[in-house]
Length: 123
Image 1: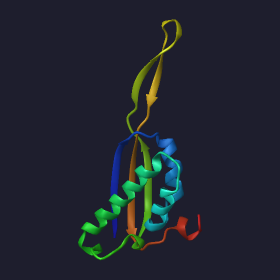
Image 2: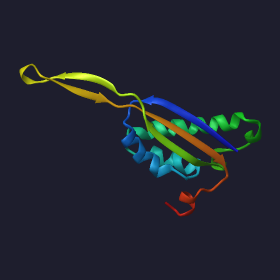
Image 3: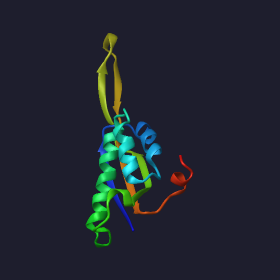
Image 4: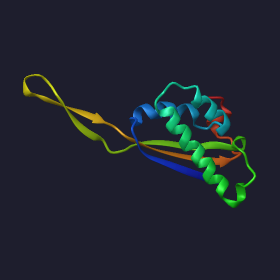
């Protein structure tokens, strides 16, 4: 049984969020949440919240009513680019530079008790 959650328009670049996503991909949810709590990255609490939302979505289904966090594994986590907000920064002699405030969309899929290749290899 799989369940997913999507977090959209997060104010962190997709490139930086992928660094965090690569660490927790394939791990059991309990272990992934613990690893994200200790990680000093801006994307860590955003990804943690999305993982917990996917688990909550799975618990809402009839098949997973009595399951805990330890019973779920992160089967898929995808970080994609969202729209970029463009701002202007004033520079010397009347010039203007563009500031790009990048956003990202995070998609997490959790499965009940299925070990993926990444977790089995110990990565």
